[in-house]
Length: 199
Image (cartoon, rainbow, N blue to C red):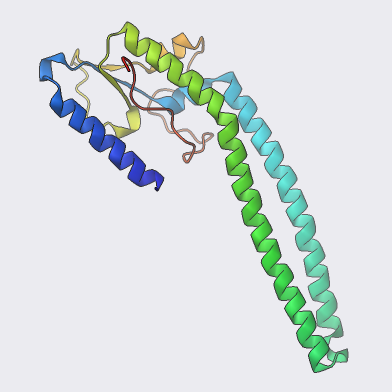
């Protein structure tokens, strides 16, 4: 199931839960998870490790591409000396090698995404623990991700931005304002759970 479909279903379930609760009883919090994540010291370590790994992978791929280009150039220089069957055989070999390089690049990219998700998991669990704790302390019925909010009445006492409280629970200061886009955080990273306390 795609990430977009999962998000849509989550939003529908949340809306259904909100509709089922008496209006006066609802107390909702929301949190900008990206703002908290990029402020966590562990996030910087994850980003550095990922960048180092990516550079290493790029170096290795570049070396393989250079070797392949060398073989292509060699073939271009020698093809006039080859008979038809030898020329066709070399072309097949080069085509096969080109496909192998493409597959290797895709596999490395998938491995990097998998490794990044694995490295992010402890941070997401830590973040979710802080969200749950703040939600329980503030007696919230549910907690949403800031990104799903379409409208917020800032004067309402039933809706609260708990981003700074969650950061405080983690013992960190926010390095960016809630709602500010983050250029350093992968937007495709799996989000921490969006619903909070009392479960």
